[in-house]
Image (tube, rainbow, N blue to C red):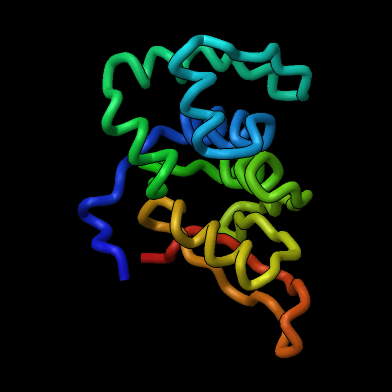
Length: 148
């Protein structure tokens, strides 16, 4: 298992920008090239991302940005709405919010691979319960704060 202490930490917003641009770029190398050259598209999604922020991050911390793209990252601090947005942007899966006090959670139908990818980026303090069915098809995952 990867040493979690060495994992690059990104803000939730930078992670959303990265995943949105990754979907448009098609490959990690193309994403790095586009950010490096400032060849950034206008975002037409509901989020209206400004990818120029990734160029700033890459300019200020080039090794951190490169590692985040090529090796993965962990989000420093997740919010419930941010988790829903990350699932939408990174996985292309529509998630549902449960906002009742004391029962806050995000629910989404995820495959084992999608669940693993989400688990890898979630900040501390969140747990994923449930998941894919025994035959490997997507199942309901409930992402909720760890109760202390």
